[in-house]
Image (cartoon, rainbow, N blue to C red; front, side, top):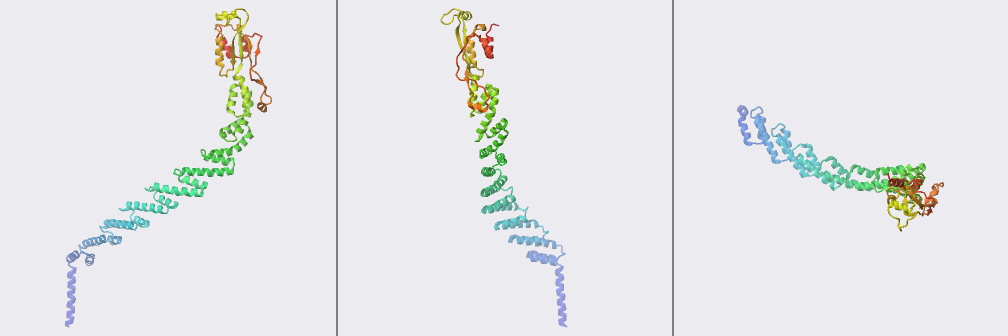
Length: 457
């Protein structure tokens, strides 16, 4: 009986203690504050979930846990806090701390993978900019340690606007040129120049491509192949070689048509090739009959200038000579009395009779001759103003002689007639033709005009 009473009393006492405890959360909260531990605040919240102080206890609990995470300064501590208290007022600070902790971890680890993990978690975090720059430096250095085209291409693809772009591009260019040089094919150099049109290897690559392209065209040895090369490399060092190889084939086609225009077109393009002389000689033979038919100083001079090495030049020069050099020497005569009347002074020697005496000699050249104007001045000096042209007669004339056509000219045109050339020979005149009549007979219009200008108006 006593035992039963004791048990009942103990139970009642315990109930009273518990009821007293539950009904006094202020006291429990103070105890939790004094302890200021995660466990103390957790127990308070557990036993007084509906107390007005529960929110305060929750806030204090978060601060205690956050402070512990700060002291530990580990990513795990901050992650645990954020997981347990996603709505805490300290979430922002915890995330910032986690960002810094993860950044330091990536930096200590010093691997591309570590930085990539960090940036994937905090792409816009406080340390994102630094992390990206350091990752970029790390990847640049890694690519440089084991350089390869693929590595540099991957770097530039990932960092097209990097501070290392110029250096990475130069490294990629060097490796690509080395690869193209090793392959030494047209396709390899074309690819390189397409990828690097303006690089320090552009000139060397272009020269190599030019040489390979010329070798290919030269081996094919066709007009289309060589024309294609010249079109692609119009100013290359192999240009003359290509023209030299192309010229004989083009000349063969030109010779089929055989026109002056075709040969002129050929020489304008292939004038420096070894077959230019052959083409020039053929063109000269085509032009020769036309020049002879025209028979002018201008046409002869043009022929000589254009075909200076032709075998026909000597023949053309002989034909040109009568038109540009001496026609003959005019010997003028007049009686002493006529001379005295016209000049107001006797002839040299004081002769005064009615016999006719020579008083002047004038060489007359063609109009195209450089001496023509000089000859006219000399003739004019012998003719006083107001001179009666019928009083001045021709005492003699030294014309050009006869010469035969050259063999080279006859080879072109067997029907050509002989022409005046060679050393002048004397031809005396007893006919007594007046100077004016003589000039008219020879169609010396310039001399006639001079004589007319001296007549009395």
